[in-house]
Image 1 (cartoon, rainbow, N blue to C red):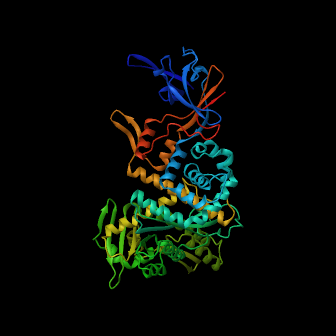
Image 2: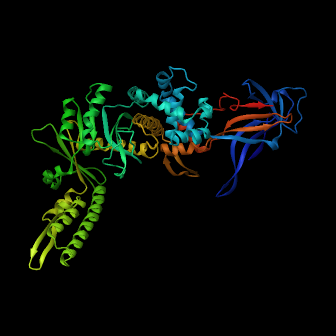
Length: 605
């Protein structure tokens, strides 16, 4: 790392500008990477050419200094002149700046700073609880970790100390835990605030609600948390205690509300509780609910109708058999490549069905069916061979083993006729594909059925509306992957619920960034002579990764009189970073605010 001299002539005079660079390796060989510009270290004695730099002393008092290289001739007796030993300039206190600064800007754009100031800062505290809440949410967005990891590793390595004016030593895990206890009672008010703010920023509407559930598990007994129970695990960890999380978003993925349930709670039993919760928070309204088939029951649909609501829901495949004739008719409407739909009216009813089939889903289900069919037939062959060789003679044991094979392959069991028959040689196991099963199998693969009481809209429009459930699924993917919602480090139920609330806050920041990028699409790619190579829109993850390389650091300028001038600056953004910042409507600060003896610009004797 070293200073690079840049000469420029202006108004007939030569000016020398300096920048801080470092040598980096690239595929094209060693290159100099610009960290930041220092401006002009003056060579001239004329006052109108002098470049002044505002610095601060240890008491926080500012003064103006004129910087010169040590070998330059300078005006004698000028107390503002500082002669810099260029060959001893160094860089100290590097901090991660870009990602956490972006998180703080998103926090302010959602006016969460104002919300938590009103909610939490009524009592005197050494550190404002609203700022501690911001640290928790920004960490969940940028680098999810435990409260101890925030204290020991993440917070001291970021520039939040300068952005929030909280010294690293004051951001400890005890304070973070106490903040969790304080934010949980404000869950309902927070959801209302975000709903209003998303409407103001993006014109978000919440008349169509997408409802889905997921589970998240913990490793251990979780004896102090009665919510943790074993149940159906979407993480394929039935051996672990878990909790169920219900999330409601609108068709664009903006969060509307969430709720937590015991880990053994059945999906279908959550709907009534959620309906009551939404009415309590937002009042009665004619909402449209979009749900997957796992949450659907006649009782749930009746509860929605009783409240004057409408629904568009998936339907269990078992009900498709009665529409076999409709599946055979050639009156499908193609809505896009490989996707066909058709509407089926129910005589004398207020509902209608939408039959859908897709080529991609058909290919996937064929592969799955073939895999399970091969496994079931292989298991049946092994059992038949065991019986034929006389190694299994007890008929009751034969039936138990046969039942186990059928139970292990429920996906294809209904396609086969299997029987144990008596022959002269003994018992024999026979199986065959049911008559007509192949035709029904070909019909049902790739097909599914929707059910709705909406009277308006074509089959294509209703199918498109149902496909918006992918936004809810994308929300859960973000919560589980980028935001790491699993409450690994909490034992008590209120702390786990508060942890989920922090993850919800992290998701609020994440979805805000997502829609800012969507509204002003930034392009990620390598510039070429003909345009941008491999151009791709930014995702929130890519945007955070790109800005995470921006750092803040102290440039220490030793002087000939024994002082050290400390300039706190942000590294120079690349062209890609500048493009992203422009798309987001953000401008990097020229310098970081001074708030303690180790922050800001300073001149130390």
